[in-house]
Length: 78
Image (tube, one colour):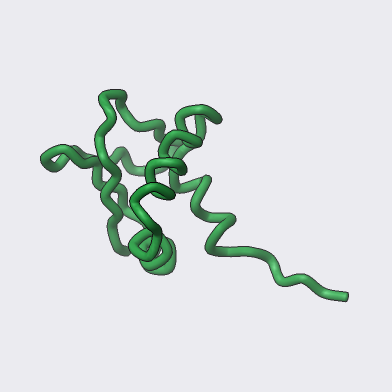
């Protein structure tokens, strides 16, 4: 397990039932995620991170649920 840091924008993060609640560290929320999701998050530009965080609020979904399809895309077959 690894962790990602999401900038605190004033509202508490949305957490799906059954998942760990992120904790506050300075002006960040720290989420526990799988290693491959953390690698993907660390490679993202700060603007894209902010966009995904806003999308999480808009769709009222856990940020980890939004990141998962980007990392674990199904293979396309003919």
